[in-house]
Length: 226
Image (cartoon, rainbow, N blue to C red; front, side, top):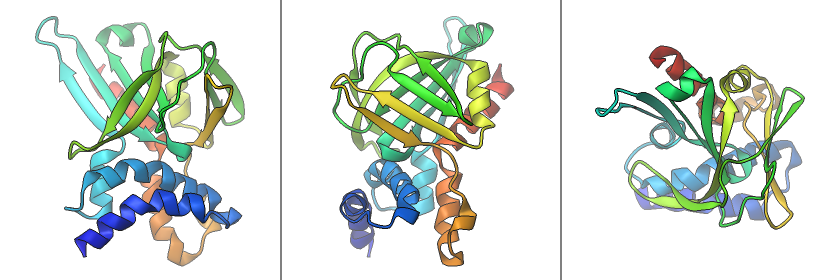
């Protein structure tokens, strides 16, 4: 049975890409696709919700013994279309009201130059230029140590905009690629009222670990620490 569950988790992304014919559920499928590439890395020891809990919107807190600088990071914030974020702030950045945001995709691809990151927050557009000269072709890790591709760049974002995202109803993301293409993702909650009673349990689970919940968790964390 455990082997079957593990196999299903690994094949969910491929199945969705090959069988995405139902437009009504397209957004939900994309969210599952975005999360599954990380969840599938986690092994088969626990329940599906346990896998989400340990792998999505993961908090890390710490304090430097050298200079007493405190920091907080929320990692593995995953949106649709395999777009992911990490959010980081320490004492110094907090004084300047800045947040260090790492944005990228779960594919091996170079992020574009210039204003390569765009947010659409409740209809308002924002563009950001990276502080990174080149794309970091790194990894995104599960709690069990497995990994997936994470091509990313870093950006300084004003803290008040992070708070605006956390309180928003619609949060869309666009990452421009050096190839001239782009990837778009949605990080908002899915409207549960559009689905039947039988589907609402899994929609609630997706919403609980959606990208916007990672931003909310980050805001709650920095309010407690800084």
